[in-house]
Structure formats: structure tokens, C-alpha cells
Image (cartoon, rainbow, N blue to C red; front, side, top):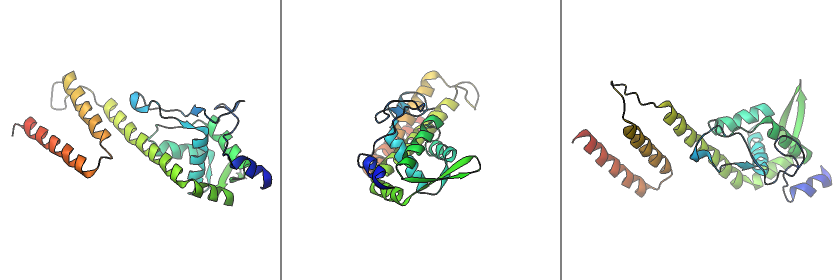
Length: 205
């Protein structure tokens, strides 16, 4: 791999392309197709460097094709983060040029695998990689919530219709509970007590 690898990896530069593979430095460019809608999804973008590291992290689990890597990111985020082939394939080409992955042509597709340098590279950045995958899991939770909220309509299965303020109140509760998904035990106990009091009052107990 030689001098070329060390020249680039020391600073871990991003590939010099934008998300359509054309000129320009992509180091601070944000990309990715976020199919999630609304405030929960805003402001969450991954840089070219982040994407490269996540692709390497996925390859640490086994050899893969580019399409399979895109599907893996889509699955981990419940469809909230789906980078286009226009950013994924240039990113794979770049890390291949750095010597971090090896590529085998099988039929008309390339299969990628981590090189020994790539394995060391991922190991050295494991904490950052874990943080990014946790971010994808967080996006997945929010996406599940959004899908559930969008699937709900105002129809009451028991007959009649839910009032708009009833639906809004129920969704506000769901949002509040979602924000407490990583709460410490004492906070969980406080929230549980509130919910039990509310349940008793709603039930007329």
C-alpha cells in the first residue's frame, strides 16, 4: 500500500467529490436521503467522513456489495438514513484507494472486504463508530414513532371519532416518553408514578 496510504490516512481526509460524484471537497458536506419527516429528523446528517467510517464498520462484520451496505444502513435506521449510490460508491472507491478495503469483481458486481490496515483503522476509531451506530439506532426509534403517529387517524375503533385535542394529547404523551427512552432509573420511577396517577384518574379509580 505504501506511501499513498499514509499520506491520506494521517488526516483521514474525505473524498474529493460531492454527493453526485462531481468535483469539490466533500469533507464537510452533509448528505443522505432522510425519508423521515418533521423536526425529529432535521439537523441529523452524516458527513462524508462519517459515511466512510460507517461503511468500514459494516465491512468489519463481513464482505459485502455496495447495495448491501446501503440496505444495511437503511435497516439500522429504519429507513431514516438511506445514502444514495452516488455517495456510497465514490466513498467505497476512496477507501479502496487508501488501501483500507480490498475489492473483488464477481460477475458485474464488486465485493468489498476490509484489508488488514482497514481492520486496524476501524479498531482505532471504534468509539466514534459505536457513537454513529447508536445515532442510527436513535434515528430508527424516532422513525418508528413517526410511522406510528402517521398511521394513526382520528377514527375510534370503538365507534365514533377521536377529537383532535385527544389525538394531540396522546401523541404529546408518546413524544414525551420517547424523549425519556434513555432516562436513569430514578427518572423512570418519577415518570412511571405520573403515568399511574394519570391512568387512575382516566379510569375513574
